[in-house]
Length: 251
Image 1 (cartoon, rainbow, N blue to C red):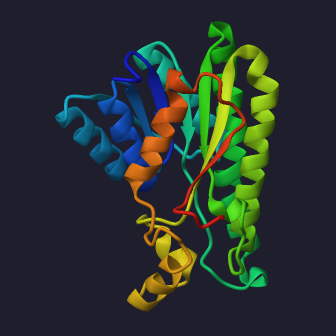
Image 2 (tube, rainbow, N blue to C red):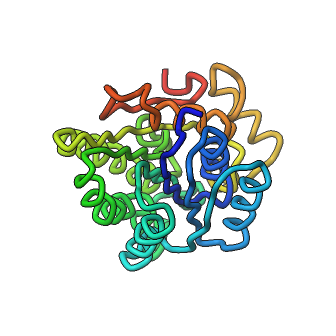
């Protein structure tokens, strides 16, 4: 029960890493606000948490839109009275392809979800956290922002921006006792895996896994465990850190 009594807002929690984080946080005592564009997926996450005895509510919204993010934070405060933790997990990518084949519309969408969302969640959560002199942000970035690979140039850039932005937030918000840390997962068993690899075939998976020293893709539970530590009071003196959860890929 390392998060007992705390409220966590988790974006993109209808599936993948976000769903795993929401379930783990709830199991550790947190009151969870699940956010996702897909209402069916989001409600599914909430139902699983509640069925397991946890506390969760769903709030749909686009993390790239100011009005939606404001509504999300207002919802969390209205339901639970406080926001202790914000996990910026929602993300999107383009299919692995030559950089000049990506449309401007898709480029803008990637930066809205992966980077602008950090600005918007901070805009609507930091003032509340400052009044309490306490808060935690966790950014789920990517090894792509640390060790970029061809074919994902604009996605790589967005994750690099997310990492730098989060570390700058950590430096600026430390005086308010608001911590900001980053988790960099290697590609895992999520809906974006096929886009990362270009296509999801046994041969392509084998090629990708061969680049990970520990010999497997990441799982939501791997990322959830790291997020739990960074969100907990056990990490009260850790801010501005980037934790690679990647099986050694960035070594």
